[in-house]
Image (cartoon, rainbow, N blue to C red; front, side):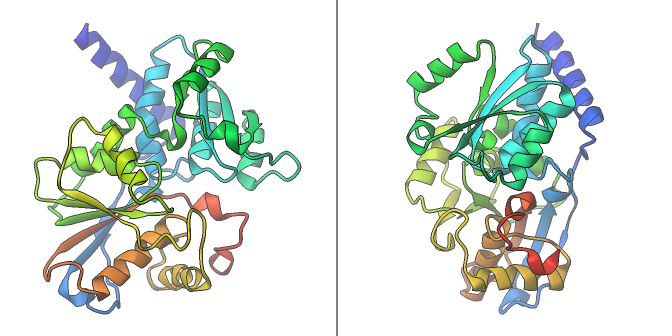
Length: 318
């Protein structure tokens, strides 16, 4: 039975890659940055944003095994959650459209009068969009609410906000198997916790430290969220909460300028919601000598550029 399941899973993954045209691995390379104190350490980047132009970065990593699972079943309906600019809903909506899977997106807030670019895309991909108020959305992880959704959408696969479930860890872990050298630190943004949890689990037996940069206010909560996805307690990770700039999607002119300067220096696009806060944090931590001299850092670019289309952060680099 295990062998049959493995063969089925392999076939389903092959179908996903062929249908969605996703790259098998993302490139990694050194960054030559003119940052204070950067000469003391080695900084590299893994460009998961280049895996696919729409299913960007960690969204593909977190969704691939859930999608493979549904292809191997009679279930042809997925339900998930997100905000009006959600990278997760955007990636999942595209995947479901291409794979002929019915998709219901439960969206926090009513954007019906003024849909975001992300929601316009979902409409184009024939997504069933259900707008809910903040109180209802806050129940998205409660057993009672999930039971009601199962009753409303029988046989549907319900994927958590951000795609962060146990299967997500398996996909994220493949980042580590693609690396061509050892790194002392792997640094990634944190929101729903699945990416960080996958990195933590995959490096459990190495000397690599996993450092998350919080993209929102959530000290304590984010740590609990990440730990809840892990099979046991690990000690080689932490989350820095000093660079959320006031909360999720909050930004300052300084951060926006930094994103633009980074692009002009490296030709790598970043945005002020996830990757911009990540890069800003790394630069500041290097300047403060947070990392030991000679440390090798790997920055994970998790994509998500589409999420900033409607709020003007990238105007000067588009």
